[in-house]
Picture (tube, rainbow over the protein chains, first blue to last red):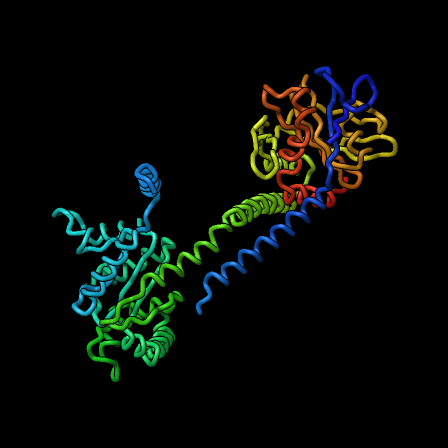
Length: 61
Length: 397
């Protein structure tokens, strides 16, 4: 992830040592909505795997 | 295998925990041989069976045997229950037999239970007794407005015609409790050995299928905790609306700040390893700005944090203006203040949460571990962030 630095009135890529008063930042790679959707999808998938596995495990012949 | 190999294998096996299996039943002649056979066979299979007459009791005088038995049940990994025609010793205070209490303890602790019921008893129960009991319970509750006490029910069961006379009424009471709890009951044919190898092969199959789910189950638990935190925030903000005079932004920010906890910044090495490389404290304050033409105008703040009446949108030294222009959420950091500024943009708003960085955090670390910082602070709980943005969406200055 690229890190940017704001110093002396300019924003640039942060390369090398930076002064203590520099403002460092890196924008989010994914929006919060994308992250939430990924989480919810993973939760759903995980839940269905658990459910399916428990059904198989408790199945009586 | 040579001597050393055998010794190593024995040492490895001695470190493995054996399955503790509690064998429970009423002490009746018909079940005595079955219990002994089960105990011997389970031990020969390498398990650790627990049974009163073999390796549990009797305890020294003065020790309460019922409490000790229940304690042993609580330590078991598996609970076996054999039910014949005898009810066992009834404890009036508990209104249950010891065997029944042992079952309740195992069930309550979530210990897997295997129940074997004499097939003639089971057949009579499911053939007629269960329905009679269900009807009796319903009728009694309808007439008196409460369920019957076990004593009343047992007395009625004692007068029930057409059931095997050798079966104690308490057995029906126990079986009804098992049935209500959806416990599967296997047939027990007295004189026929139980094929324990098959039972344990099935248990092994189940365990092998379920154990790999550990990660998924733990992850889902974590997600549940995260959504609970988000839901709690929403409830608290909703409660503010009910206050006289309605919501004010300062109170909303305070509620948000209180829900934002500190944590550890980690470096991930694929799915295999994470290394703690830093930490940050609980959120200490917040500011809220809204776009107004060519500037970001101050709306509200919480706690003693730095703020300006406004920032010009082209001010490169302002994390508020930078975040607005990026049109993305971002975590900013300055070593001179030793603070992380976690900025969320939603619509015309930029909300900044202030988190103290641990004293050993610096610009060099920040450049190297920026992904870890974003994951630890901004992406830690997407449910909470979504909720904060919902709240921001509802704000109208």
